[in-house]
Image (cartoon, rainbow, N blue to C red; front, side, top):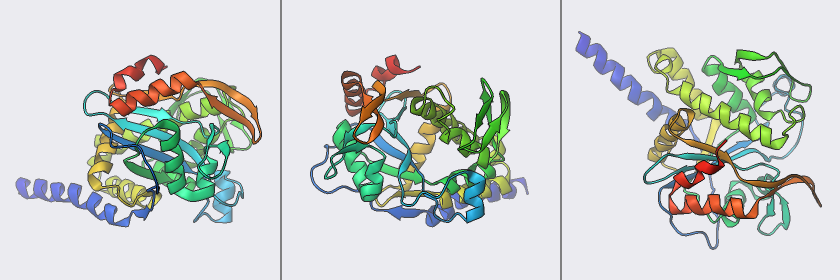
Length: 310
């Protein structure tokens, strides 16, 4: 009897993610033209878009997403999984001022608006020299639904945060954030003295917490929670046309490591976080520091990034 129960449980653990995999939307993310050659390890582009698609007027109001038409990238991260050593999660400030192929120089998040995932991948590759092997994207509504499926995420705030634009009013201290408050927490920047740089730090913190909670024993042994989290995640994300199941498993495992003490988290080194440009205030990368970071990833040597970790 016990053996039968264990067998059924193992089948459930395997069948749910396999079924969820069939529900994931795919998108063409492969740029045309010259691309960086193959590099050691696997490099992912993780994108949080500001898409309001599928949200009702009431949901937009509740989540504080506004009415902006079109779509830009609210979050951009590069996840490097080297052949050996620790994975590295690198935040790319969305206001980074970079050349966008065929569109002059602009904030990097505009690349998605101009040409979708394909142009965004091309922009990242041409400005970093990195070959993007896999692509994953999540929108506002999907992010909130995954957080709610997990029963919320605990965050410890060093001080109270009140931000009208993000619809949050959070007290100081440790607390469980539901999907609405979690979305506001990672999007807020006007009330953060560090602006976009503070924002990317919170985004990494939240993403790591979600990854850790998603594979926690509480999630895996609870059939209802396991189902809800698996299907909510599948419905929330969009992946590259050629991104494989094995790559997604590798990404999940790497994020689990990053959420603990076995990964490196950094932001692309910045020379000016508030530079005046033709497209408004933007972020200028530290040319040498950024080159060092991208060269290390291209070599598959994430240990060289530790000096940039804070």
